Image (cartoon, rainbow, N blue to C red; front, side, top):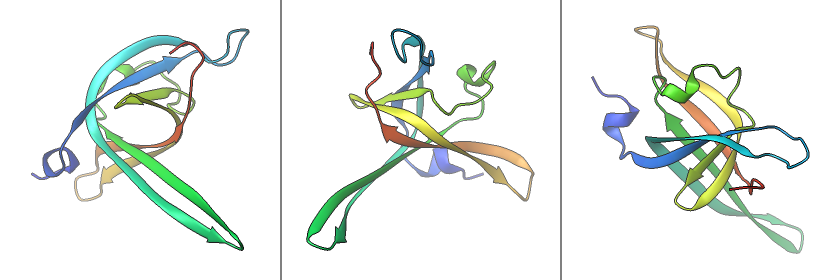
Length: 117
C-alpha cells in the first residue's frame, strides 16, 4: 500500500511542546525527535510598486507519534526543521476515505522564534 511516507522522502524534525505565554513567553517544555515529509513553497506576490516574498511550509506527520498523546491541540506548538523554528498554525487530517483510516496529519507552519530555543 502506498502512502505519503513511502512515496516521498522523509526527513528528521523535532516536535517542540511549548508552554503558552507566561512571564518568559513560549518556552519549550519537551522535545521529541521524529521523521516526516516537509514541504516548503516559496514565491513572490506582486502588488502595485511592491514585491513581497511569500513562503508556506507544511509537515506531514505520522498519526502514531508518541508526542500526540495527551495534547488537546497541535496548534501553538513548534517544529524545528533544518535549523529553522516554526509555529504550528493549522492542522488537517489525511484520511483514506476507502478504508476510513487516518494515514497522516498535515501541519501548516509559520516561521517562529520561541524565546528559549
